[in-house]
Amino acid sequence: MSQDGRVQEHLIATYRKKAKHYDVTSRLYPAPGYPQRSQRLRAVQSLGLRAGASVIDVACGTGLNFQLIEEAIGPEGRIVGVDLTDAMLARAQDRIKANGWRNISLVQADAADFGFPAGVDAILSTYALTQVPDCAAVIAHGTGALAAGGRWAVLDLKVPDSTPQWLARLGTATVRRLAGADEWIMHRPWEAIRAAMREELADFSWTELFFGTAFLAAGSRGPC
Ligand SMILES: C[S@@+](CC[C@H](N)C(=O)[O-])C[C@H]1O[C@@H](n2cnc3c(N)ncnc32)[C@H](O)[C@@H]1O
Image (cartoon, rainbow, N blue to C red; front, side, top):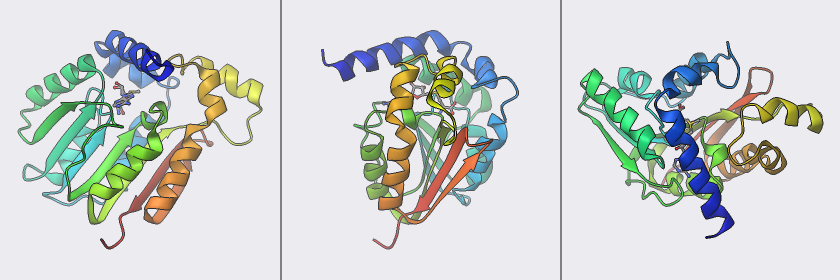
């Protein structure tokens, strides 16, 4: 098995273990009191959703964004949640059932291989895309499927630009145990996301959140 394959297996095994308590433990992520809920709200708002819109939630996990998206698109809208980990999707399915939502479908897939449906109105990914090795390709594939004027938004963690390497390692070691905090810091995947979104999207915006520990990147597909 390739190194990428091994990393992915480890990631799936990790999220299988986390799935059951993810909704509770994620409230402490990356640290207790972190303003995750307000960041999610901001990310969904950046999509400019209207009633009836179609939205892909990439690496949706247990579906923590679904309620906010549902409030914007209503029952005529449509959500497709995509995730690699079966156990996270099982929790998302429980959430769908508990809320009686009939307009959400779930797909188990690697975001890098997912066939985005053509003409979708918006794509969102929260706290996940920096874990996907080929995140630039995901952004390119997604953009290709967006309707003209459709929106892409990515919310994720990053290391503040001014942080010395040793301090960044210390801080993120606690929250990025998956493929290794060192690798995540060294590769600075948020930079690949920023470059890909700037390249692919019109009216690209990049906003640093909470002292540079997170970012919200967003933009629209230009005329097709
Ligand atoms: C920290 S959780 C975030 C879940 C959700 N987006 C949220 O905001 O709560 C990361 C999720 O990314 C998923 N994931 C990681 N790599 C992926 C990939 N290559 N393709 C699809 N999903 C992936 C994991 O299975 C996990 O559910």
